Length: 261
Image (cartoon, rainbow, N blue to C red; front, side, top):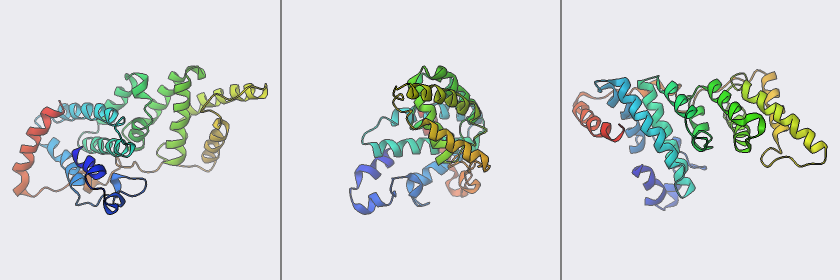
């Protein structure tokens, strides 16, 4: 996190800012950057754990919590980059233990609404392939409560637009339960508007959103590969470690484990 903070505040030069792209993204960093190299050590550290699954679960729990704390950081560019950092770290943990997906899905399921419906973290986890899309979409549809929860309904619409239409990380069939729930809300909104009322805030474009989803389904739109999650480059996820640095990696593990347990 300190390294990412330095990217935002430690060097105010245009060159330093431009290195992250526009909008800023950790994906723009070169492979030799210290942030990227640090992320690549995570699967190696877990490979040296005596109880890999338990260690990976503890680390994933901690990273999930930190991602939500980071989403409230200031300035917003720092929050964005820190969320990306924690999601990327979770993707690396996933490469060492695939059970991370089931664990994170359950963590979201039993989180309070503020955390489960976080517009920065939850879509990022979903786009990275770190959440079970049908389970998450079913959960959001349930929390919507037929449109009675304005916050959940607006979040559901945001999730569909971001992950089904923009990122293409979720297919329309995977989001079917959520799309169905939004369609029922859209019908009621249309009746309300037809009677002279106004659409609820955040739902003005709901009919158009659903039309776009149907159009995508009609042409057989398929999800893209996860960005930094289960579909990450295998070579990057499981780097080769020279023998001379193996002791250093073991030492790093002994320092990291207490921080994530």
